[in-house]
Image 1 (cartoon, rainbow, N blue to C red):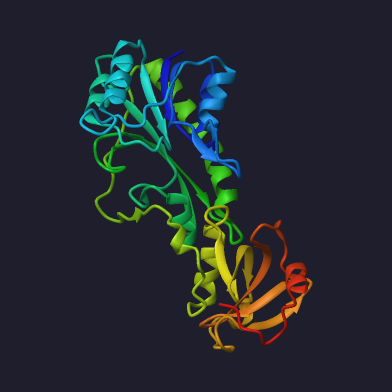
Image 2 (cartoon, helix red, strand yellow):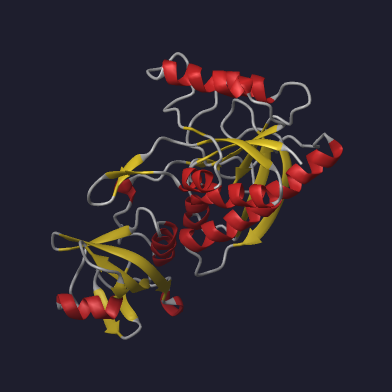
Length: 326
């Protein structure tokens, strides 16, 4: 079994960390981002990765940066010094959130080590970058997957060790696809580590030079729905932005989050009315006109409230057929 340094932060990474530990590999150090304020009280909360590490008594490092020339140079030097002293075979990285400098690669690529292996949630070179799951759904991709990559200094440019595909279902959200990809990534990294433990080497192939796309970070100001767009694009955005940041519409000045929707497939190519106009309200949901076609909103949430069926919130807010939302 291998001695592993694990660098990751959110739930996607925690799933992989748990699988590595349960497979019998020794996690000698966890690196994760510093605790962040969250909730109404803005109290500091440990990342999912840190929480698992503490439960299993795994040492944790939380440098704010790994760049020795930056504002957190002292923290970076301390972290790199600690990493240099560790005995380990491989460093696994999954949604860590910090840029790894050359000093980290120099340590991880010493003789006998496997370097830095990244679990990336896309079919590289498609969707390099920060938000591959969101952007794949938003773009209407029919499939995605996991790539286990040998990291280098580029942005997800390293050679690919393993890659598996999965379909993106018509009703998929980032939340559901995230969970499926996290499980796939966990299985694949364990398989990769087991192979290295047995063979002490890993084969990899350079990424294709064609089909490169970038999954730019999701910004909160992208959340507002543009009802001038066609129904398919709006439906894709709603599902891509679930659970973060949540697509939004305006009822006057009130912000309403839109969590789920479906297409009214019989008229997607038709102009049905003023974009944002409520076409119909039924038990199934609230149908709104788009630039072309219409979408059926099925789950909504107003500020400070709970998620609920769109028909229920429409009744609460007194929405009527013919009303225009923005």
